[in-house]
Every structure is written in structure tokens, then in C-alpha cells.
Length: 411
Length: 225
Image (tube, rainbow over all chains, first blue to last red; front, side):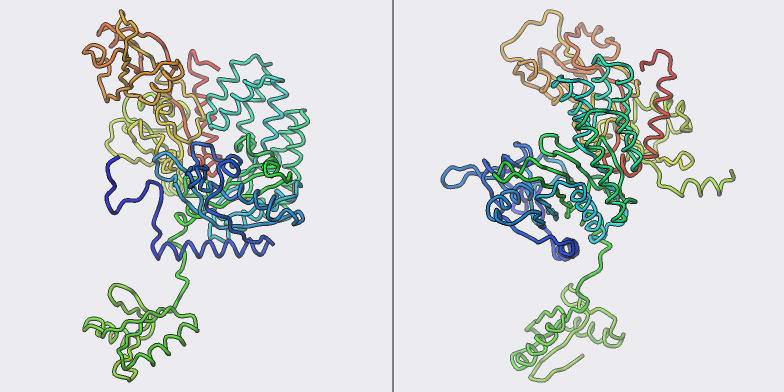
């Protein structure tokens, strides 16, 4: 690669300018406040972790991890999500805390990726982990909180699709007992969203016509609670049945939360089989081509850190939500004041600034005299009433005060 | 239905955005849509417009260069699209592959001169570098892949490469240039693809189009199951 130009930064990372930051903070604060109100406490973990602990345990594939060496030659990773670090914390620093443990976070995470837009190397996630509760109620709580968080963030039109890895595991084991390779192939096609390949692979297997029809039909298993009863009829396998019953119970809980209008059951909605152990879900917003949140149950992760426990959680893709609703958010600070002063007026000016700041206004000070254009703008503003904005050097203010020559002159 | 009612019916829901490949596949694809009951007017075929709305069918069509179709769909600027399996394999985008449309049938093959023998530094010319690299890696062969943008058949004739990887439909061009098909890598047909989010948010519209297309495909003479 040629030497970068001075304005360039590594591919996949972004600068956030004041306008964007204020909106990102607004989303972040609203979502974290919502998570607080559900009893989740915020934590922070380091940006870097050991490759051999958090790196290996995380759901991110090896080639997508940012790896670096420390001065002793140990491989480190930049965290690729917050779930594995939280599992480490729960198993070590918090090992005496009783289950269930409810934690929330807002943090930047890192993924080394192909050079495609829409896939960032560093982005922000806001999420929760609920550790130590295996019940359908815990899964439903996490889904309901995801819905509340999306609403708190200002996303209005969205859907959440819920699936369960156990259903396909059970169904395939029943249809193709012991045939690991065929099962893995079929799952790989579904995971790769390649339904054509999935059907072709099915046809290459020796299956009864009925079974083949059933397996082809699962790509249509999408809808409300009625999908559960259809799925129950499909497989007698114990794992599959238990998974569907779990989803049914979750649905009942979600109904009690009053959020079912946002939820659909989709049994082809599957996450990574090696990582997720139960229900998985994704949230989709109208007008954005990528999911805005994802989550699921990962009962095998904590055991890798020495404290086996069931766990479930989700992460909002906060930077994508910013992309989606950034323009519809209102400015958070309503009053922005500019104070101009000189040596004689300094004390009075800074006193006034202190007072205004205490009242919640954003106050900027300048030590130079206003130029003629600015003074004219102030006069115009004063003549036009209080609602008008004053522009000084390209920045908008709602009010302008000057303290020159020891006297406060208000224009 | 009078025109006003028609308009109301169309604007009542969001249009399904369909990315259509211009060129070779377009004619057969639009015919298949017509057979499936989507009334694409025949004057679409020659238009130079890039976006054409068809509110009475609840769709709007984006006329795209075939290789760009998966990109539009992945980003969600098109909800669904029609694209050849060759492009899907090469571009490797994160989209749903919903349906084999069974049209524009051909195959991806390794092609060379009839007297081809293993060479010390094998070179393969192709329009599909990622398909070619992956295939030869799977075959346990380390080859240098050269990306070309057209007239791939020239490469072995003028000594740029000893083999090529390209799409073969009838084999006419190969025969005329004295080349032979050495191995078939995979079969190609056009596919219906969908964006991850649209597939869930516009589930009904997509599933209903999918069913209609599947019906039309099954009704074709000589169609597979």
C-alpha cells in the first residue's frame, strides 16, 4: 500500500463530529436509562483482552478479530463484542455475586473486515447480558427489553424475528440420524441464507418424500404463535419439541409484556450454531438494509471462564440506529449563549457565564470585540425578538452578551 | 377499478423494489414475471429509464448492471433482485438466495487448448477471479489468477494464460476458437435474491411473489421439481 495521505484514516473507522456525537449521546443516554429502569447495571471493561481467553471464547471468527502483540509477545485482541468480556468479569471479579446478574453496557467494539461499506471496523453497541437464568421468562425479558430499548432510541417501525437453534438441531438429527456431514451442510446453507442450495442438498439425500417435503417447508415457518403448533407437528425429536415449547412459553410471556405486535417467530432465523445454544433473535427496522439489534442464549460461554451458567442477552447496533434516525432527533441544549468581553469586563462576564451555565445554558466566551457584521447581526436579532438565532463566525447562538469597558452592554 | 382507486391501492402500501439485470437475462426474467402474473409492459424492454414504477403490481424496478444486483440487494436499496449464480458466487454478498428461476442456464467451466499439459507456472485468466482462486485451491493447485474484463478466450490463444475459467452457454465460441471445456465447476441459472431486512419486513409481498414465480417455473415444459 502507498503511504497514506494526511487526511486518511484506517478503513472502516469513523470520525464523529459534534452534531453526530450529540445525537449518538442522546440515543445512548435514552437507551441506557431504559436499561437502568429494567434493573440492569452498567459496566465497562478494557478495550484489549487476551486472545487466548476472550478472543477464543468470542463468537467472532478468528480472521475477523483485530490481533496485536504486547511487549512480551503475548497476543491480544481488541474486543469484538462485550459478551465474552462480561462472561470473564462474571466468572472472576463478580464470582461471588449471586445469579441472576443483570449487566448493561455501551461500548465500542472492533472487527477486522473486508473493505465493504456498511461494515465498520469500529462501531458502538449498547446491550445487556442476563446471566444465571435459563427460563423462557429470562429470554422473553431480554426480547422485551430489546423492544423497549429500540423505542427509547427512537426507532418506531421495527420487527423482531425469533428462532431457536435447538429446533433445527433436533429436526435434522431425527431426519438424518448420525449423518453429521449432511446435517452440517444443511445448516451451513441455512446459515448462509442459501435456500436454493439447501433444497438442492436435500434432494441429493435419500429421504422419504414426506420428510423431504417437511424439511423443504421449514423455510416457510414464519409468523405468530401458530407457527409453534405447526412446528410441534413436524418433529417428534425431544430437542426439537423442547425448543418449540420454550418458544411457546416465551410467546406467552411476551404477550404479557404486551409487545407481540413487534415479534414474529421464524424458525429459519438461526445464529451461529457453535455459539448460540437456544433462542436467537434479530431486529429489523424499516428503511435500513441491515439488522439493528441481535441477541440470543449462549449457555456454553460462561463455562469457558470457569463458572458454568446459562446466559442470554442482546446488543443494539447503536451506530446504525444513528444512521437511521439521526436527523429526526431534536437538539438537546436549547440555549446557547455567546459572551464577548475585554480586560475591564472580564470579571462581570465570567460571573454572568457561571450563572447561565448553572441554569443549563451552553456558554461560549470570546475575548475580542465583535466585528461589524456580528454587531449588525445582534442588532437584527434584538429587533426581531428573542426567537432568532445569532451567528458568530459560522456558529449559531440563541443569545449574545457583551462586557466591554467594565460595563455590561446588552445589544 | 378507475384510475384513482388504482392509485390509492398502489400507494396504500410500499412498493417492492426489484433489481433487474439489464442485458442477457432481462428478457427471459421479465417473461417469467409475466407468466407469474406480474404485468410488466413490453415497452420496459427497450426503455432507457433506470427506475420504473409499476404501482398496479406493487413493485418498482431498478435496472442494474448484473454484477451490481447483489450489492443493491445487500444494502437494501433494492428489496429483491434477479441475478445469475455466477455473479452470486463471485461477489459473495450477504443476501437470501430464495429461488432457482431455472432461466439463463449455463455453466462455469475450466477451458483450455486440446493439447493442454501441466505447466511450471500455471496461469488462469478469468472474469471471475474469486471463483477461480477458490476452485483451484480446492483442487490443490496453486495458480496465478489473471483478471480480464472480456474476450477471455483470447488468453490461451495468445499465450497469456494456459487455461481460463469462464461461463459456457452453448460452447459455440469455444469451438470456433479451437478451445475445449476441461472441467465443469458448477451449473448456473438465475436466482431470486432478497435483502435480510426486507425478507422480514416485507415478508408477505416477497413470499407471494416467490410462490407465483415457483408456480410459473413448475408450469414450464421440462421443468424440474
